[in-house]
Image (spheres, rainbow over the protein chains, first blue to last red):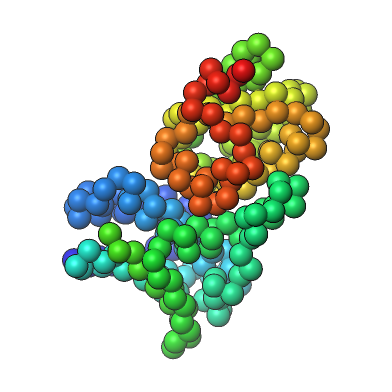
Length: 135
Length: 108
């Protein structure tokens, strides 16, 4: 099973994406907690792309594909923005006391903890983030 | 999202309903900002109706805790749905926040 969506590079499009994921989850009969986690990693990954991969103030389309095969869920996010590797971000140290706990970096931390495999590549002037979850 | 406010004893209780995400985190930020402006130092965030939170929302929680600690106040969280508790666990937030099962316990 495979579905492909395209959304615009604006924050409001995240709500549209969340709606599409809800519909897909119903169609594929995904459990509710998994659907929430899937929505979460997509919001984190796609909002990063919207915030950091474009600097030309132009409309771009971000392609999101989801595939489910043999209980393996694979999500790919492809954009034509400037090179942006979310995995190069420094992860927050979550053992620090409150006062020293950094505010940023939580998005990528959530993606890495929820998904089983995360990889990034730059090919043909495109960023490609691949997220895999065994369900 | 929806937020209701209620003063119970010394505590101001904010009950959160719905989602806190990249699109609407500023609503929670404003609501908590108003609590600080009103000089409330004992706060309970009842998360019973919260069914989705992303890093944008987690940042508001962390910022609020830093602020409460700086002014020697109290911030208690309670009544989290398991999916939300899991997000707090994997973000390392469960070790820095005081999280109670029920509002009654959070008010003690």
